[in-house]
Image 1 (cartoon, rainbow, N blue to C red):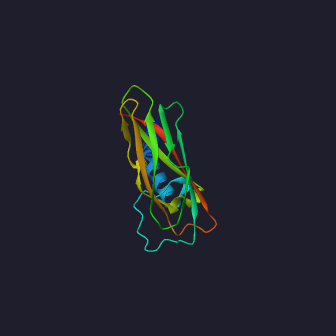
Image 2: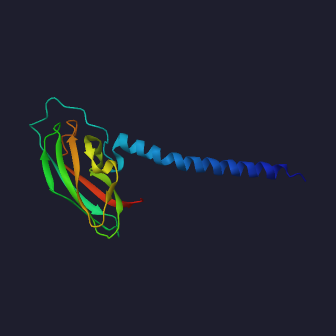
Image 3: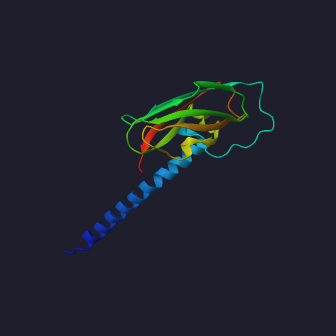
Length: 172
């Protein structure tokens, strides 16, 4: 009997394992691109919104702001206002307050989500604390800025958006 079939089988299994490993690395960026294009999963646009010459002053959309922290995370995070009534095509600014509840220097990262998910691609953040992580001294409190615009192309049947941030501890 020859060992040739066993050698081929081992090479096939090793090749399959390498392909699965490579696919695992490629899956996260592919999923991010898919979510950004479709708005799936509440992912919002992260590029600067194009200037609109004339906002739609006939239409008002309510944007609700929500905040939470990951389970067990040593943070406080809260919006300064619970909602804003906005005109699509106009740039708005609001703030969130965050505080480190520990005696240590820590870093945090906010992850946004928009509901309904189909509206996420129409919510454009121009400036957002979610773009980068924030560093905090012990017990430090910071005011975090969000500048955004709801695109005029938001479907007419959507009159309320909920923007939610979850705050996570980030590695130093």
